[in-house]
Amino acid sequence: MTPQEKLRRFEEQISPHLKSAYNLAKWLTRSHEDAEDVVQDAFLRAFSAFESYRGDDAQPQNAKAWLLTIVRNTSMTWLKRNRNAGATLGFEEALDDPRDRSPDPEEILLTSCDREEVRHALEQLPSDFREAIVLREMEGLSYREISAAIGVPLGTVMSRLSRGRDWLRRILSTPKRLNPKEGAGLR
Amino acid sequence: MTCDDSRTYLSAYLDEELDVAESLRIQKHLAECQDCQQAQDEQLVLRSALRDPDLRAYPSVDFSKRIEAAVRRAAKEEARARRSSRFDFLRFESFHWMPAAAVLLLMTAVGAFLVTNSLRSSHQQLVASAVLAGHIRSLQPNHLIDVPSSDRHTVKPWFQGRLDFSPPVPDLSELGWTLVGGRLDYVDGRPVAVIVYQRRMHNINVFLWPNHGPIDDAIRQEEAQGYQILHWNGAEMTYWVVSDLNNAELLELARALRGH
Image 1 (tube, rainbow over the protein chains, first blue to last red):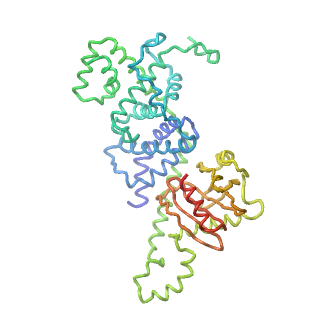
Image 2: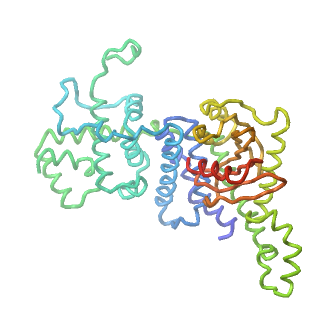
Image 3: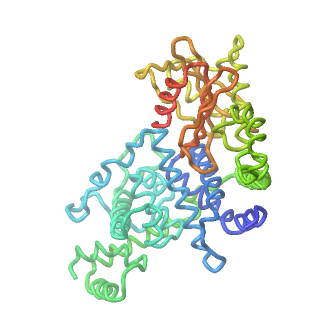
């Protein structure tokens, strides 16, 4: 592949997924500046590793999953280096098993969601669960692709998605307690 | 199927990731169990909320252009590197196939060899001389550091906004390397971070920037104009270490940096 050919194919197959790359990086780092750093780094890595990418026009989804794997790994390296990580440790336990739990009397049936509440809840979700949910719901990756991107078995993907969603549902269906700072959100 | 099983697999069922037999079992249960049906409805509400395009984060137009430019720059650099490697046959190492000329060449090449010994390409030699020049320039009064501090928590943030990457600034004081500060320099056509350490009044300049090339963390050593130059390409960063300190101690520092 000549350098011109490589650039042409990269811009055709990988560059269109910049939006997905940025969205994932933003949800993982929770910061606009960090997301830009991560994406720039990831794109340069992707470009230098592009020869190792075996995809074709028939499978455009593959290109996205391939790029998002790089973005995800770059984000994790970045978070570890800049924030002493911590963020992912012990959280598997922090989300209690929904089956062990009796229903919260304050929970109401979830029939609609406020976007800002969803955003807030997703930001609070521990990163192991958050990345699975973003890759699935926002980027539409299959369980197999998520499992390859995160480097965990399929069963773990399944369980993180299930528990993550249940946690979100529970948070969103518990009415907000009175909080003077959020007067506008009272109901 | 029990309600517990149904709740466990509900999410994978809605993602259409279950096999046919499991899907049928869950469907059958959902048809009979109102609680689980309700759980399904709630999951569907949540799903459409999570798929709301307004929940996504979008890159700015400027940023998208920056990425495009960065990729094109990388492509150009790669093309340039390939062009220069076409002239590989001119490099001294390849002349062994000309035994008749070998002795003569060895004699004339030996001087150049001493300078370029372990640095492999002419590009690396250019970088090495830029790094060395940067080091020598830094020894002039008031040129060594832009941000004087022995605190890595001061030095590291100082680089933010000045560079498009965040250089690691390890605290190596326990190993006898005193952090004295950092500065910006310009090497290989890009702004780079320089972390300055000291040992026994010797200044050590650590030049670093993101490594976009292959990883090769074998430490290469070089001596030029009385200075030691050490270089390796780590997983994250390319490192060049320059000082008039002796080789053995510098190697110790390089290994400590590489370990971080």
